[in-house]
Amino acid sequence: MQSSSIPLNHFLNFHPKPQLFPPKLYKIQPRLDLFGPRMLNSPSIFTIKSSSQMGCAESSVSDNGLCTLLEYVGHKGANMSDDLVILFGHLEYASKRIAALVASPFNSSLANYSVDNVQSSERDKPKPLDIVANEIILSSLRKSGKVAVMASEEDDAPVWITDGGPFVVVTDPLDGSRNIDASIPTGTIFGIYNRLAEVDHLPVEEKATINSLQSGTQLVASGYVLYSSATIMCISFGSGTHAFTLDHGTGDFILTHPSIKIPPRGQIYSVNDARYFDWPEGLRKYIDTVRQGKGKYPKKYSARYICSLVADFHRTLLYGGVAMNPRDHLRLVYEANPLSFLVEHAGGRGSDGKQKILSIQPVKLHQRLPLFLGSLEDMEELESYEDVQQKVNPGYEV
Ligand SMILES: O=P(O)(O)OC[C@H]1O[C@](O)(COP(=O)(O)O)[C@@H](O)[C@@H]1O
Image 1 (cartoon, helix red, strand yellow):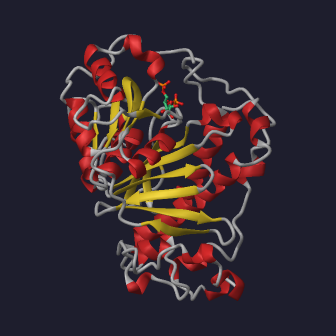
Image 2 (cartoon, rainbow, N blue to C red):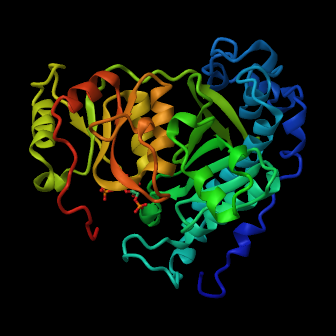
């Protein structure tokens, strides 16, 4: 519970511009109105490939040649059920509210408020922005009418929303928020499962837990939203991984990165290497080898580490290489599984250093594990060192 008088209402009562949502959800309008003649002739518009060039089905392309997230999801780009299209409309809305929240001049005053009644280490205490983001997502999922259960990093147990909801949503509403005062990128991660109708008869707590602990192989869709210099939503429904960039002028997420293919090999490793002396022998050898250019790829690797999972993952997806956290820190259900689903559908691999993340059966909601995500060849080389999971000093103060 937050201490009183946090100006949360400022964010929770924020309403979308009425023309942006929900009417567009159900009807695709010609979007010539979005760009005046000057903008249509502007070179920056024409550097965006046409949507059909980018693999967006003709029928989902607006008259202006662009393809929005909801057009893509609902009209043959992905050809999802109406229920899933509606759910994505609400997720899109939630992500725009969170994007506004993290960019707000008021967020640092929110961060000064303490959070009471939280039984966890100082480092793991949820920050107010996490809580606000959680509320925003929960409120959107409730309004969608399509979600039976939401399981979040911010809640001890899954929240049962509505009996008839066809979906289960797992989420880390705002990862990386401890760096927010320095305006470092943050992100939302989510995974979507079908509700398990076979456990409908069980008591609420029990069925909420069983629904939330589904194996990553059962994901219907997953995604992340990166709040950075651009706000980007990257999604997969199990056939390709696609990214959409928020056009702040119109409120639309525009398809900018269709069918992302992670390069089979990158030249970047991403890890907090201040922990080098706590790493096992195998991981030290791997990093020592690739940074000297003595690995299977005969070039010296570079290091990049933002310490914000979504941002480190997004860069890895686009440029290749490996992003890792070798200690038992990141969470299987709402971090590792959704991101592994995305990287696997982009041709890469998600592993705990020994086995595929998606093949690990979750046993508890906040289960932690080592996480390695990246290019196929880099991941195979890394795993060949076998001893790459950090087992000592799993916690740090910073
Ligand atoms: O301290 P480490 O091991 O570098 O971990 C950093 C990772 O922890 C995270 O901050 C998530 O941890 P929290 O949920 O405790 O904030 C990731 O965004 C980041 O990748």
